[in-house]
Length: 388
Image 1 (cartoon, one colour):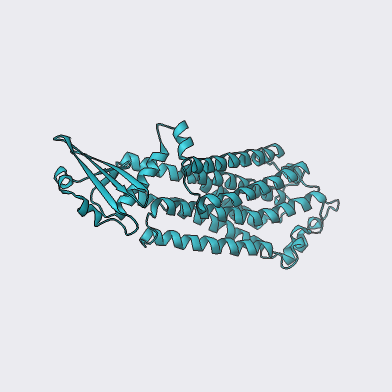
Image 2: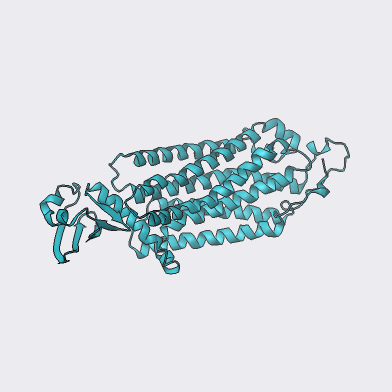
């Protein structure tokens, strides 16, 4: 194997490590501040999807602090001191202050990362339920899947979180001991962390693709459905970082204790873990930032698209016939709308609210305007009928 002096760290330099440790936390603070500002301005109550971003941000700040500490102590982004003993196995029993710091950072990074990723996964799942599960008592397939995934993520977070704490038994200090002691007392470390990285990647792929069939089934033009799907598919950024971390485990885990590769592999893992957390927090907040995104991306208007989705499933829960196009309910025919009455529509109103319908005569032979209002649920659907 090549000696440490022949290694190249490529992009994981102290400067790049410090950069991501400053850039992503600042971005996370801005996104969460805008998220809560948007909720307050819209007078919308914060829910689990909002509050779960807080522990994720705290975890991100903690990981950023660890990275800055490691880079400032020459434990990250460079080469560790080598043993003076020239024998091939000398590194197994050698340690240094820089190596101890590196191993300590890895131990706490794995622990903090589990809870950060668990919080982000739960946040996006609860956001799905806020948008798509209009009636919490309606046990449809999507409702069941999201509920099950929430339970799975909670179990996953607790399992790997507790496992990370006791990875070296009752004495965590073995995690930053010489390599020989780590191999003896933390023998399951590599397999455990590999399972953690692989399961994290698989769940990310499933969670971020979960709403696609639901959105595609809406009665909306294909272009609008693709626009809505694109909002959620920004999660591909997180999946990419998670995949990079998983690939490092799979490709290099067998050489994790090799003299020439150990510190480089750990640095790569820490680097991509930070990127995954930073991107994840940003991506989780994007769909909820309706007002700010309308300001900067008025042409795309993701907020109105998401409102359209909410209205679509509200309309579906009332069992009305027709289609929803970007929040506008289109009845199947003019004759059907003319025959509709308050009594006809009130049959479909949920028990917690009464549905009042006012019918305004057509302004010409081709248009008819309807307006429905769900009084108790504070749901307002403006409906416009147009001739096909």
